Amino acid sequence: MRSKKYKSDFLVIGSGIAGLTFAIKASRIGSVNIATKKKDFDSNTNYAQGGIASVLAPEDSFEKHVEDTIKAGAGLGKRAAVELLVRSGPDRIRELVEWGTRFSERTLAGGRRVLDLGREGGHSSNRIVHARDLTGQEVEKALLMKVSSIDNIRVFEDHTAVDLLTEHQLPGRKKGRAVHCYGAYILDNTTGVVGTFNAKMTLLATGGVGQVYLHTTNPEIATGDGIAMAYRAGTLIADMEFIQFHPTALYSPQSSGPSFLISEAVRGEGGILLNTRGERFMDKVHPLKELAPRDIVARAMDFELKRHGESHAYLDISFKRKNFLRKRFPHIFERCREEGIDISKEPIPVVPAAHYLCGGVLSGLSGNTSIENLYVSGESACTGVHGANRLASNSLLEGIVFSHEAYLAAGEHIENFNRKDRIPDFPAWDKGGTFDLEEWVLVQHDIEEVKRLMWDYVGIVRSDKRLQKAHERILSLAEDIHDYYKKSTISSRIVELRNLATVAKLIIKSALSRKDSIGLHYNSDHPLPGGRRVRVVLKSGGQPRLMKPDGII
Ligand code: FAD
Ligand code: SIN
Image: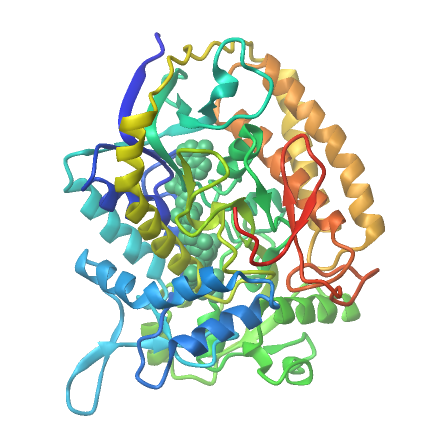
């Protein structure tokens, strides 16, 4: 089958909250192609439970949300980005409601209906807008409905972006810096053909990297593709060492696939953590107890499990009425019931799992990156809002806010592009290759090793020795995987394996570059924060560099 060419003003890669909200708005300016590697709803967004943080209560304030965000991020957040995130929040929530999202409400004494605002760790006020414990599903459904009603958006499901179209892809221009992006090579998973998708503005919205760890709450799509593609193209990547581990994934040794999340909102409703002896421990660790920032709770859990050699701890919410739990947490209630746990009668067994990446492709306030025409939003972006640790429920917010900012920049971007730039004639994708079952089995084995390596050596608590070992091993594994990629036929899985190896390398490199402990990065050989507040920035072919928190691109 012959390779096809596609053209649109905007190419959006990914159909989670960041990609869809941008696409809906950008379609007011020009044509939009969305490529998404599985079905349109397959995304981390669809799994989100707790909700979206925003200042909507009269007793809350922007200043409080800004300070909570900066504090959770251990002072490493970029203040200008945090201000934008917080102040734009209420308008973006109203837009989601206008587009059909139905958030949970409650009735005030006078009969007026208002949004029901929940509480999560690190927040000094109730500000979590939610749709029971199925917030992501509700948002994703509304956004997809909206997208389907817009004529100049075309959605390509089962299409995996392989590499960005930059100067590197032009004949005779393999070396040197890429300066512009003109779209991407995208594989049609059904036919196996790679098409050339040209665009004047490309938005990477490919989500997180959870699948690089053995235990993760993230679904299969979270393989860091956008970050790896952008790194290969030469963009700046930052804060990759800051991986958030969620303290409470369901402990379910029999089940495979992503770890089921027990939302922090359960602790927001009063749930307490117990070790297997039935002792509460968070009250000895932090004044906010179970609602301390997530890095502190996850480390306390890790300590507690190791101290007693236990496989799990417990989260107890059984003192609440069954009717309340069923209504507030229908999804969690049901899933636990399937596992034989009645959460209104007994505590839930829980363990930490890799959950969220604070770092990613370094971006400015409009989602702009260090490559022209390339923008990024959502979990694959590093806007700087999270600093060294993300405040709960700030990530869906980040996706809608920075996609909105990218849209605000898009009109002028397209005008400038039409005046000054034009899309070069990129050659059709020409990578050949064969499929060798024997080698495939070996490379699958390699990737399982990468996941275990990351879990054991680059997890909640790190050390110089473990990081060094992980670094040595990842270099050799990544080389094997890269060799296999070069000689094998293209497939979505091999694209993902190559990207997983790349993001693992980026996380390890960044972690090794820090000689301190801050936020989500804890190294037992350097247990204190360093004197200087710095962020680690990576670029392909160069040494890691350090940047001030407010460093701009
Ligand atoms: P995603 O929603 O992950 O979307 C990425 C998209 O890119 C997908 O469509 C994927 O298929 C596509 N894609 C990836 N690679 C490619 C490729 N190569 N080619 C084409 N398409 C590609 N955050 C909150 O703020 N509140 C919460 O309550 C909350 N709960 C969470 C619960 C769980 C279980 C999980 C896993 C996360 C939760 N988060 C929460 C985090 C939040 O869901 C994510 O950070 C956010 O949804 C990311 O949105 P996104 O649009 O950037 O990426
Ligand atoms: C949760 O519901 O605990 C997840 C919230 C988040 O990751 O922000």
